[in-house]
Length: 161
Image (cartoon, rainbow, N blue to C red; front, side, top):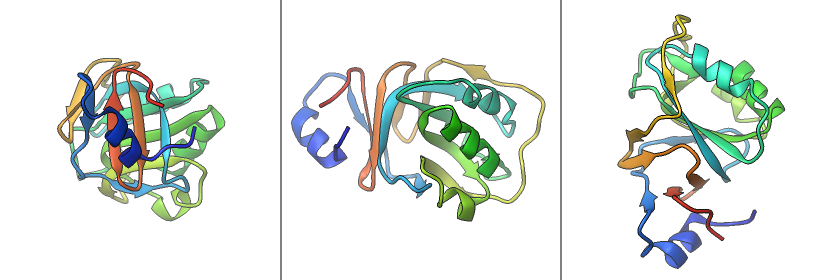
């Protein structure tokens, strides 16, 4: 699908369920634009559940990770980004940090995150999936649609065209 978030905003901004994320997240990965249906996960400094979800084969999906905005470790590195690509994920949005950014920037996936951090996360397996997560002024819901490009991130209850 070819789109720009600016054009989608122009065409759909009056709709009842259309949100625009605050510009808090930096762009990583080789794809500056991506879109798909949302899968959510809420974790804190622990990426075991993130990895488990990225191991699932999917089509046209984006993983939204509410990492609590932590700047104390990374929730995603190059190995997990490669895993996401291999399993069909279009993009990952993280309210937290990533690492291995130089490698990730060469990979064919779109990623948004707060920052980079060299320390890996804990491995305790704590977290919840498929619930409402809120950050950057947006409510991210399971199976809603996310569109991201160089201008920003928008979320809609329905697929936009």
